[in-house]
Length: 143
Image (cartoon, rainbow, N blue to C red; front, side, top):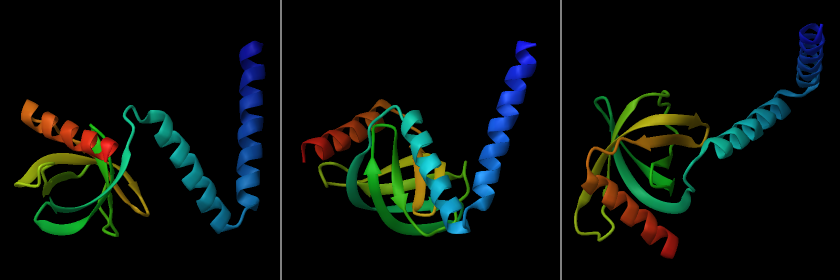
């Protein structure tokens, strides 16, 4: 009986949510969706991202792009872009190393897509890459 009551309650809540969403304008629906996505991403994120603007060159398949990294953590970065790049797409990024002596290359995968850009999860392939990323993030925190 308890399972039936719970199922009925869940269905009622879902029905109420759907009805309220349907009564919203498309603009309000989009705003709600963005807020829900933002809250969900914040709960999932294990490493704090630090605001950081840096030019990044990146390759997706055989296409080359140049945009800006908007924020970064030890495990990923957000690239502000208008390019339509699908979730799960492999990306090769190149940006300046923390000491600005030479370009640094790192592979990643698109882990998040929103209207402002793409969230990249780094594919750290060596301790050197991990050390460079951590050094860069540390520089951002202290900068």
